[in-house]
Length: 107
Image (cartoon, rainbow, N blue to C red; front, side):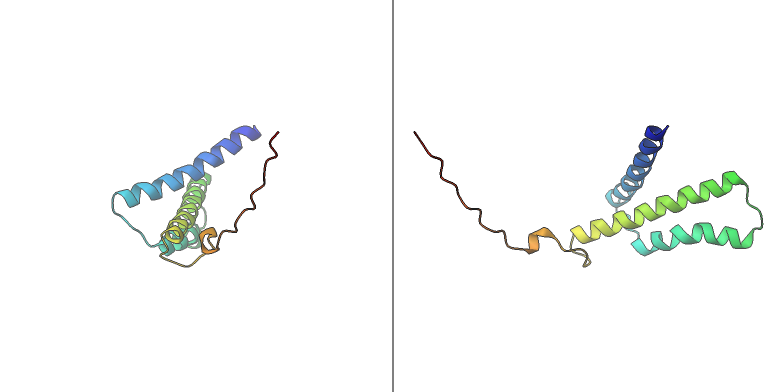
């Protein structure tokens, strides 16, 4: 059962990453903050306006919220790789240290 849950979660993450790639290949570049705010508001707004939401509806909202959160982080990762925004330190910013050559003893 644990293996099935792990595989479903991996598949869920891959679906979010693939959706961002499909949108960008079609030339649709959505601001990542739209995904970020949608991840919270898609659950918050229906919960405020409706007293009782069926369990299926809540679960669907949670899945969409998670999908938007994954898309938010994936869009940010792509922007960092393209140097469109500052982010984590990239390894290519540091000079590479020269490795010492070791001499192999020949007989």
